[in-house]
Structures are given as structure tokens and as C-alpha cells.
Image (cartoon, rainbow, N blue to C red; front, side, top):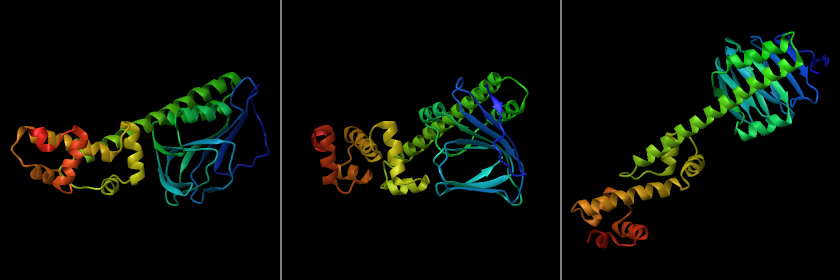
Length: 273
């Protein structure tokens, strides 16, 4: 059965916490749940790997967290996930300290679920406050072990799926931003580095996201768009091959003709005729 255990853990005065352990009837081994009350000097530095996944939600205040060297701000309404292998440091803002709910869980099935939903360590702006409060309240309630487990599991699933949906939505938005930048580059000469810089991402990440969504590289996509426009111009206008090449910012008309023949099997002149 589930029960509250005393592990002789001395929580800081800023923490209001409960520890639960479940028997083999349930796929979660143990859960630590608590609220961190605002304290300007509050900070945590974890360098050792843990067997626990952490889910936390900022109720109010500000702070910052550093996960594996990457610094991210925290503020009210942020949920953040810490996998069991992450080194992390985080601290409250001295003038507006954090108040947050935290949940630490040890579970093999949870490992698989997090991996399946592609939820990675990081900070997410998602509306899951009610789920965190439901978990915290049921952990402290006088109720059956079964009710505790299923309430925790149900709300934890909602937290994970909400974060996963947020990740997918964000990825779609990023992909569309990349695609729009490429489409706006048909009549210009821009490098992928320039586009990546404008979108505040690395060149390699830009290529990875775009290729994952389309199966081709950004360069191949842009080249196809340029050659498609070239086909339209050659068939519907009297522009010279050089003029078309210049308009679409190819290095020169010979390189343009070479690429055009590779794609269509004909030179620009043959295509026009």
C-alpha cells in the first residue's frame, strides 16, 4: 500500500514537502512533492546524476535555471522539466523570489513515457498550474493509496502531454519561419548562416529542423524554388537567360544553365524553345 514515510529528510524552512512510496501494484516507486516558499537566498546546485525526474511549476516570482550549462530565465507560469541525468543550478531572484511546486518521481514507466512524448529538459510556458496543485493537494490529503496514485498519474500525464504538444507547436512554428525566410530569398543571395542568425538559431539546428519536416536540405529547397521560378520566367517572358540568372542571384548564367539542365534535362534555351 501507499504510505507517507519518514526518511529523516530535513527539508529547508522554505519547503513544505511530502514523501510517498507505492508498492509493486503501482508503476511509480516513490514521489517527493513540495512547495518552495519565496526566499531570496534560495538556490540549488546539483552536479550528481539522480534516479529521479523533476517537474516544477513557478507560481510566482522570478529566478533563473542553468541546465547543462544553458541559462534560462524563470517567471510565473513557467513549468520546467529536469531529467534524471541533468546537471543543473537554479536560484531565486533576490528582489522577487520564486514560489514553486516541485515533484520528483522515480519510475521506469515514466522514463519510457517521457522518451515517447519527446519531452526534454527545459522551461515551458504551459498552463498546467491546476495539475501541479491537484498533485500537491492529493499527496497531503487523507485518502486511499489508490486515489493518491491515480490522481498523481492522471495529472502527471496531462502535464507531459501538454508540454509535448507545446514542443510540437513550437517546432511547427519554427519550421514555418525557416520556410518563409527561404521563400523570401528566391530573388536574393542569402546564406543559411544569415537566415539562422535572424531566427536566433544555429545553422546546424536550422538544417536539422527543416530536413526533419521536408526530407530535403534548406539549400535543395531554395534551389528548387529558384529553378521553378526560372522555368516560369523562361516560358512566359522574353527575358534573356542571363537576365533570369541575374534576377535569381545565381553566380553566373553558365552555372545557372548547368543547374537548370540537371533539374529539367534541358538547357534554358532548349526549355524555352
